Length: 283
Ligand SMILES: Nc1nc2c(ncn2[C@@H]2O[C@H](COP(=O)(O)OP(=O)(O)O)[C@@H](O)[C@H]2O)c(=O)[nH]1
Ligand SMILES: [Mg+2]
Ligand SMILES: [Zn+2]
Image (cartoon, rainbow, N blue to C red; front, side, top):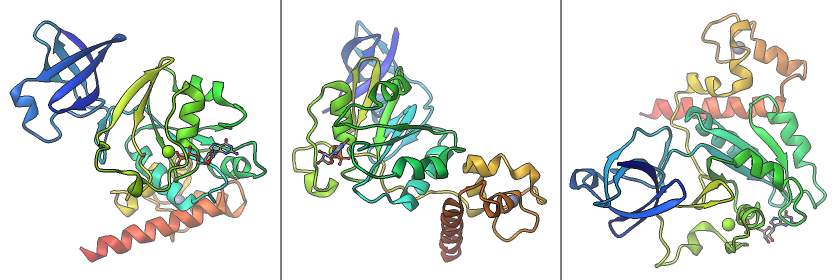
């Protein structure tokens, strides 16, 4: 019995990566029944003689559409062009932090004249994300980015055309198609929607279109728990369950007013908070 990770699923067969070796296995019947019984990224125990998966280990993290388990880190790519959508970025970070996934923010296209890196530092330096300035064209920052991903299962996320495929190609000498028009039109009849994992230079990459549109499934009053820079101030707020919106003596609001915390991210926080509150009222 040895353990490994499911890196590919194809017509009822599972490719398992164990210590650099791959095994083509089937699953014991009881593991196949549920649709999410075994997904890409699952850590499993296999019988290397019978070539069967005997056990699926508990998942550290789990994302759906496409299903992938045990992602360690998400590399969120942002650039200009396309114009950054910080509202989307905040919702993505909210979801990722609530899943306890490590986040890297790669500010790409540093060869072009824009100050997205400065904006990102102002808005996200206290979130605990690693922030790297990179260029898929000049290679700037790529070795640092690779170091941050080493030994981890990493998924790429971000708006279309920010350079996700270009970065993977520049990092790992692959030949992914770049310049995709949109996720939808690209998904032809024969392309699979099942995530695949490949390993290069000690980094495992999930090959998916990314988790770009995620609707956070979080209670409005819990949102601030997943804003690390707000959570760290909570004990200085007057109320133990301060949502940092309408309460008096709020440490977050004070730091926004004095410019220590980004007013833009705070405005977006309040919008997300109110949006979730409105949605809750509908049910
Ligand atoms: N100038 C510049 N262009 C880039 C860079 N990275 C990607 N691009 C271009 O941006 C476009 C979208 O890249 P692509 O990798 O397809 O983005 P994806 O949709 O996120 O996978 C393509 O035309 C790339 O050539 C970069 O670092 N600098
Ligand atoms: Mg792409
Ligand atoms: Zn507060």
